Image (cartoon, rainbow, N blue to C red):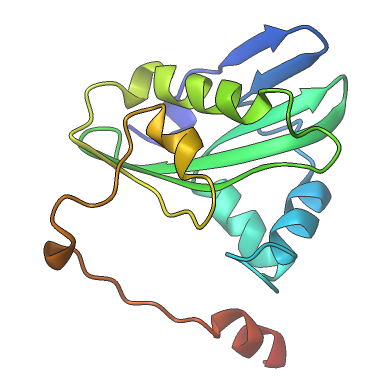
Length: 156
């Protein structure tokens, strides 16, 4: 299944909407937030654009203003990784992050996956509500982490 074959998704709650409509997302809002985040500090705009192009994105809007975002990287058969989840300042504390996760977890093409992954420094309580926990066998998991890749990209 390619990203192009994925069905559109929209959920409405009061003045807010969550959508997978890529045409409506605000790349400036997403890039500005991520470039200042602890997990993607300094990320170049073109890298954010490529990451969006190759992911299933869920956007939160208040009318036409983007106020939240998350993306899912998946093969849509066995595994999904949730990345870049955020709600902008001024809109936190309204349950939008929880609703965003509810929408992601309910998306039809993400059902029946064997494994989900994500990384967080400070939102364990949110993700635990959706069945996430610390790695059962951390000794089996490995990573290759290039902490300074965005600085090097900017220098090129």
